[in-house]
Image (tube, rainbow, N blue to C red; front, side, top):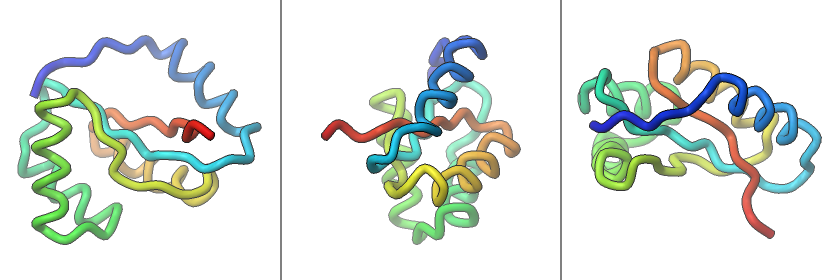
Length: 99
């Protein structure tokens, strides 16, 4: 998995903006050079409730595209999953869906 540069400052600004947005959101998992496919798959299964096959497909897309929206919902429903993923050392953000 390749590294995706992102500054903590831009992440904080993005998070602050999304808190105020009332529309739909996506939970984005980012590619990196640190985490193994197995760890990402296990995390998606445990945190997002994905099946093994779904988590494996997501991990492959994350690897090839650099990021992937693994789940959609309200900011409030995605925030705990985003926190759980980042606590496992995997980069994740919540982004507003285009309307």
